[in-house]
Length: 456
Image 1 (tube, rainbow, N blue to C red):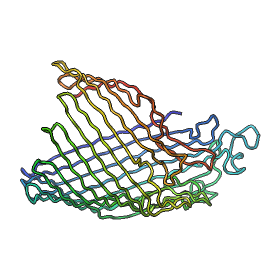
Image 2: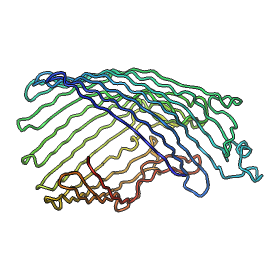
Image 3: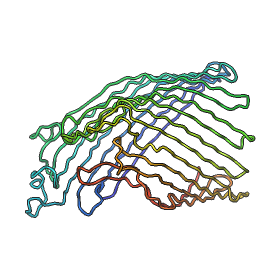
Image 4: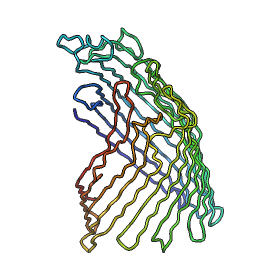
């Protein structure tokens, strides 16, 4: 089966200059999409684990804001935001759906009822609606030509509902056997629902200082927020249809932005600390195998970033960046395992990138460019439990592009290659040892392509 993913969207941005110093901006957007993703999750000739993700959704958003542009002193952005999304989605999990348990020559519901595992399909289906409304203000005050104070405040109200929710056990030929959620074994049309309603106040404060050389030094504190979430992986037990609490992050950052050698070199750097609370995660009960969304109470992230961009001469740009991370879960438990001291997933200790863009030839007809870039990532885990066999060791990806663009910038053509040395690596991994296997998402292999574009 082929994967299908289609999206459509439209956006309208309007600006109204109320005066020389005040502007009203409206951004209205609508998106619609459908997807169907079948997957042979075990990667073997047998149908050990087969999954299907399907759904369609639409989203509407409206942002309305008033911004000032006064000379010095106080400036601000005042705004209101609204977002609504509707999703109709579902997932299927099929286990050993090519085995004739009864030996009668047919694979159907009779095979599944032998142990509710072999030749069985678990499927859920639901409709989800989420609404988010917020009012916000962002203010900066120029104390002097060198010092600027910054602050922001946002009030958000979120609510959501997962309705018409049902999960069923079916035979390999899609005959319903029993409802697993809401649990009514007789009425296959029975549904249930879950909902949440939360509000939050978030914001930031900071100070910018410009040196005599016009370099920037800054420090800031901000509080971030992520809304509650439903468990879309509820398949087996009614208690799996639950809601996780919102996540919050208290972020502290200091940094600098500098230019020197007549602005030929830009050097930026930052050090940050994140106090991460209530991270949402999927928990599997080791006794019942029930999957519920939970919150990891507390983690911390300490890191630093450094990037440099240089133009040694006209037509050549060189860039490099270094990222360092030290993450630790300070309080948490999942699937019966204490997580204290573990690293957060997808958080390599070292990440380094470097590359250049070179105008190989430039004349009145156009410009020929060559670009080369690479990225190095150190060891990283993919799960909160930090399972060593599911780790991704350090790897390097190299990309290249060779292109031509006309002098009027209207036409362009580029030949490109990604992962040109065909590095084998994983983007994610899931522990399915209960089924006798591990599930890996393999990274994109060596890929070549040609891009042609026209600007109107």
